[in-house]
Amino acid sequence: MLLIDTDNAAGSPRGDVDDAFAIAALLRSGLPVAGLASVGGNTREAEADRNNRALGELCGYEGPCLRGVRAGDVPDRVDRSDLWDRGPLRFLALGPLTNLAAVLDRRIEEAVLVGGNLTSRGRFPPWWPHEFNLTQDPEATRAVFASDLPLTLIPLDVARRLRIGPGELRGLEGPLGDFLRRSSVRWSRRSLLRRGSRRFPVFDLAAAAYAIDPASMTLEETRVRLHGNLWVEFGAGDRRVRVVRSLDAEGIWGRFTALVNG
Image (cartoon, rainbow, N blue to C red):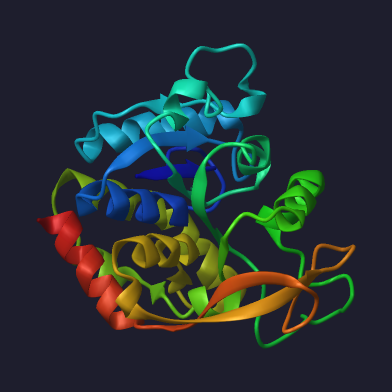
């Protein structure tokens, strides 16, 4: 069973839209989903919850939409005890790690994160890379990496190979395809202004692809060290993780298109 934890901003006026692609893939995949949870990050937690419900309806999802631990005293929070009574869950963390850190004492089979960088420390080390999902809640990130929770990391420089543009988006059909296309307009424009191209990476779709078909990726066991600035150094330290080294971007997008159009 999967628990999808996301700061989904598709439906909000700003924020990354890649969460929506990951959610759509997972909900259309037929994999059992225990819950769709909201966390603050790309947008406010309450907006992420609203966006999750709207996207879930488009995908035919009838399971619970759970509020994050910072939503206050609400009945359907991600840490409610009965959610975890069915057995270990796989936790897909598509946003900051606030909710994951709050349930570290529960039965989690594996947590999947999109973060880290295999090939570079960035342009201005040690201040860069500034990884949004890891730096939004530093205490939560440190708690997760200090735990013995089985972690699988999909580094940003690997996930960013999964890039799409107007051509790929035109191939998406139906109400769900229309929604994803509309949601992507501002992100495509942003990419054009910043990089001179309308193509943009859908990082979180890589996490969904790993859950759906791990054969589309190459993984290895390694060690990491989490530095004080939350930079993840691979091949150092004593924290054992699995890391995705490569992925089949064309195959992943083809399968995603089939799920949306099917």
